Image (cartoon, rainbow, N blue to C red):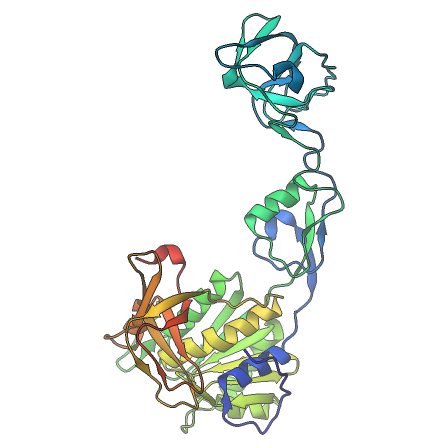
Length: 421
């Protein structure tokens, strides 16, 4: 991906995909920071370092149910030749009981119990036989440190558990909780609005007349946003410039980012960009050397990003996934690619339609016999069937004429790896 920064140019025309992506990134900033409970921070981006308040564990603790001993006392212990030690007491998890271990003694401990003073190791219970409340047979040796979790070995007080820019993942959140962290600072998530435009568009659940279609683009975009934790409002508006302008202004009062669907191309009824110009937006680009999705546009209304997506399902999906979704996530501090990529071996030649364009193709990714991946373009079915049936995307980059059979290429996943067959 290019790293050069592009400024908004109100006279911009067709631009390359990489140029458009960089322009979006250059004109989008994180929304701000909020303090929230650790339990509500899953998958959020850390806006500040989350630092351990306490060490974990706070004591030297036993990793096993067994007996704490001095290593020298059990150095010769074997299953056939046990060592008899005097039982000096018991210590359990959470106990504050202080037990001083002497040579020739053992202390019964459970998992998580504090290690008695003077003890050097813990022999796991399956190698021990408690013969009375006074003695225990030890049938295995234990070098210094065996089965002991040292104080602060998981996390030390003052250490950074999640660095700024890191992700609060469930496992890391558990470690943070153990380190005494209960509140964190994270980048605020964007609130989005989707406005679907067209006289023929009807919201799902409403009555439909011949020639009308349900708002499938709207449903798909909302589903994608929701899957990334982005809340959004939705509406449908007719092909009427004043109505479009009114709806855009209304949605921008509450939303941090606006997406329009349909009305973005060049016909007499494609009114969206013209309406935005009248509203004073600063246009970044309109029309891309990218297929599908060439009719997409991007700009700023005030300081709020607006993505105009084409109405055709394939163009709508590709402009959203490759441009709008990464931009919206960046507003929440997340600079990671939204779609995971894996290397896959191409099962066919793929010819570019035009070497000066970036081309994306719906694809089917599958496991090969060695556990790697094979990929081929998705064939057959209508536009919506192609979108629904593809589990991945292939990119033919600008400047490339053909991807050849057997070539290993990066493939974007539209579904989790576990869903692949």
